[in-house]
Length: 472
Image (cartoon, rainbow, N blue to C red):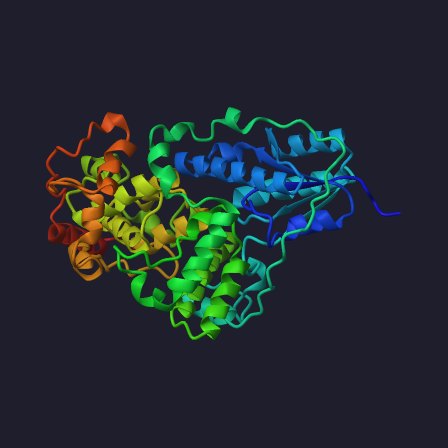
């Protein structure tokens, strides 16, 4: 006789119904499926913007499940304790989930799996967050890739499984376990008034993600290699927001990119390389987890980074450095919850080099402010800019924000879009910044634009001198 006991589907960063191996396994088990999301200590530790964006994603997914005759059960507490409670309530004999790859999640999931198996419960984890499981990609010597280009050469020709279809039905139990009310979790509380400003810029859920992918492949990917660095152009996929929540899978993006490449769309190859760059970040996170919290190149531990909240650092956080490219990019983040990738590179270089401030200061700030925050990509991006990471920008390369602006925003459309000061009639994008930032900053568009916190040439010279005198 088939086992008709319920299966608990433990959802995390996989908030979709299509191409979901764990969901497919739960449906194939033969009994009812109980989807559950657990607000545990790792959710509690999220920054303001990622936590708020998670709440929106959960609300959307609950609606998608309801359309299938299912529900999203919400519980708060220690993951193992919650799961054991649900097992006792429902008689479930199988718990499944999508793997995560950061050390805290691995430790939690390993402990849960071992404890449930000890209890006689089947517990299985599945892929779905990455194209390639990190332990399946290794050098010819069996080691870890530390440079992106060889990593790309190793994975670019691999077969990637075709995306799974959305289940036609998700079997429901006769009686649902009790659920918390999402609003009671107050996931958006720390966003304060910024939530209303950012919300119109969110493209939410699986539907929004698929729409984004479709528009990008139809109208943008052909010129992606040329337009992705032009600050004022809408030339990127913007899928980082949806990938971060698992509202779309990398497999779906990869196969769409392959089709575009086969159609002769030149930029598709660059898009595939960007997906592989995300994979590289997780490859490093899994194999060398120190990248998340400390200098990947440990010799940089001796470098005298500034870690104090100086006036210049505060001005950097506020988007008021007096350097147009830096300020425009930071303000874009406060209004939209995201930042142009070229902008991320330059603001990170400016903080770590012109201001000689530890990349961890910027990393933590982005953790709080980005709706597309991703632990692996954020850490690797910051260490790339600082020069302390694998495959990093050379430590002696100090990006000049002025020349970068001339190259990637020559007509200053991007600057005018985000900096209100000095414009007689600034656009709503620029004035929205003042509605999004904390009131305690006391800012208004009537104030004059600030003078630079550091002369660019002076900051570059100080950085190069510090590097020349480094003790490693």
